[in-house]
Length: 549
Ligand SMILES: Nc1nc2c(ncn2[C@@H]2O[C@H](COP(=O)(O)O)[C@@H](O)[C@H]2O)c(=O)[nH]1
Ligand SMILES: [Mg+2]
Image 1 (spheres, rainbow, N blue to C red):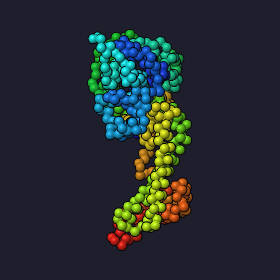
Image 2 (tube, protein in one colour; image 1 turned 90 degrees about the horizontal axis):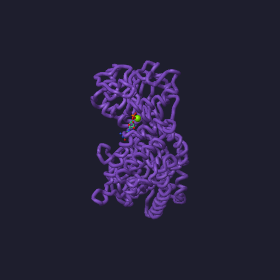
Image 3 (spheres, protein in one colour; image 1 turned 135 degrees about the vertical axis):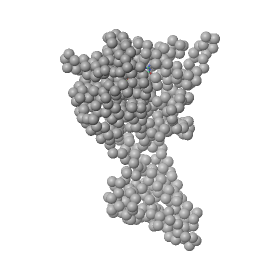
Image 4 (tube, rainbow, N blue to C red; image 1 turned 180 degrees about the vertical axis):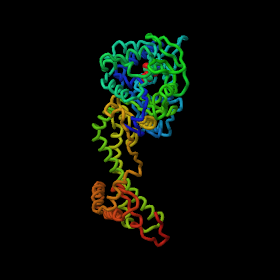
């Protein structure tokens, strides 16, 4: 999927991240194991965590942890919170609004932590469960003085984060994965061919991973070698291999460079890179020098929204691709949820129709009563009936709302029962995650091997962007010429639905709507925007000059 046009033919160097990019882990297994070791680390410092169990559904990529309140939130592209959980309990719409109604989430503040990668799933899950324990008074951590420690939500987050960090670096977790890759890795036989194609097309390939040499060496051999032509190894694919890269600093700073000179990882300091070597550390500008390319010549493909894509773009202006495996399941789920989404859409449209008609009657009432204008709807004998009609319209809108609210709350629950679709926030908007992706990743896809079907020469063209005022343009020409009877067809069912069809005034309103559509207007409108034409509703009042709306 392309956000910014990218010509793969002109890319001369492709950098690859390893974990969750070239190698995709089975999230339940890998994160479950990370969770297990993080729990052990917490237990060692007195946390009563024995009864906790990993639940990967509690968390998804793109959520934001609110360390001050112990919540996890899903935010839309503007920074407004659209869903929230406290601990493992999902907050109602009202609770969410009460807590975050005035809050714009700014990720530069320390309070928030964005879950950038699938590696964050174990962290988020453990934190949510421990928040619940903290609230219930079950998180009693004895101190040396015999008291119990009272943790804040932020201190609790720091403890979880530290425990997970330790799990990643101390060795037992990675040793488990290296010992039994079949258990932890989803193998993809087409990754190898994708890389070979790109190499044969003349592109320089670089592996740039934060993992260390010991782990990289074992895992790449396990995951790639079996799918290569006989006798070939993964090391021959890459023109340079960089481990312990320390991204994001790799992209933003000048870091020391070491060459790995023995199989067991002995290192020697170096000042520039050479092809065919294996390095630890270094920086993105050294890669540019090595291949004599920069900016638009070079693309980095990774799974971490911040360290792989955001910083590569911000500091180096490299072209970027993000690997988001969840997109695969989401597309399927969205297709399954199509009926729900369509029903919701049509209920919202119907409510909008009621609101539009109500608003126009109300406005006309104000003009008639407040401004003293003569109205074709209101007069002494019709006023009471029109008030009743307004009451009925309001009632109908409440009925619609009672259907819409639970449907909105449930939307996407077959994809994730707590968070719905990762790409959406609220009914009509994209999530903060998607905003980040489209801002920093030129293309995004669910797996590296998807590049295979497009060849190394593909011209990825960004899809045409649509703005609010573009939406109705296609209908414009057609609709200005539409016979008013068609308009009647659209409005009639609504009027019948309000059970106010027996009112002569609503019949009049209906006629007014239809007449409004008779006059070609310079503005695009649709049959769903029943705007009575003001000059048709009013005649000059005896008391004052006619006002133009
Ligand atoms: N110390 C921590 N290491 C982490 C954490 N989450 C992931 N990781 C490790 O980073 C690399 C990612 O490699 P890359 O190929 O994607 O660049 C991998 O070794 C992970 O174990 C963390 O929270 N703390
Ligand atoms: Mg990665």
